[in-house]
Structures are given as structure tokens and as C-alpha cells.
Length: 122
Image (cartoon, rainbow, N blue to C red):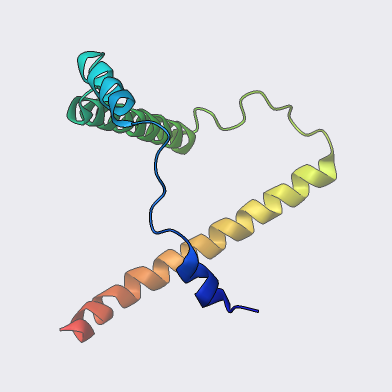
């Protein structure tokens, strides 16, 4: 039995074509060249960049607007029913007081330690 290399060496190096393929290739190239031109990439890239920038700007503007309205309390509890359970109202008030005390403590710590931190930095 012949080895694979020997059998591969016996195969013809070229296969004759049944017909000449070049006229069909040339016709396809010519038809494509005379047909509709491909759009240029630069104008499309500029349009896409503009669309992305506008979308990002609108999203940022909406996010900033929503945040400022929430901070101002304009949207605070709009559309929500006032809780009627007295235990809930009492617990929420306690939590809000605790949160405010913690926040005030944090603000005091920052205010009193910041000058020392600035001095130690230099």
C-alpha cells in the first residue's frame, strides 16, 4: 500500500478548466463599477457620530433634570398614597430622624477634620 505522500505526489498539479471564467468575472466587475456607487463612509460616520452625541446629550439632560426636580422635592411623593398605618408613619419618622442625625454627625466630622487633612497633605 502506498503512503499518503506518495498518493498525493501522483495527483495532477493543475486541473484544466471546463470553460474560461474570466469573461463572467469581468462582466460582474464592470456591471458593479457602472452601477450604483457605494455610499462614502465619512458622511455616514459623521451622521452616526452626531446621532450618538445628540442621544447622549438628551439622556444627560433628562437625567440632570430628573435629579434636580427630585432634589427640589418637586417629584417627591407625586402619585403615591399617603400611608395610613400609624406604626409605619412612626417608624419612618424615627428612621428619618436617625438618618438626619447620622448625616449631621458625618458633616460635622468632615467639617472638623478637613482642615487637618489639608494641612497634612502638604
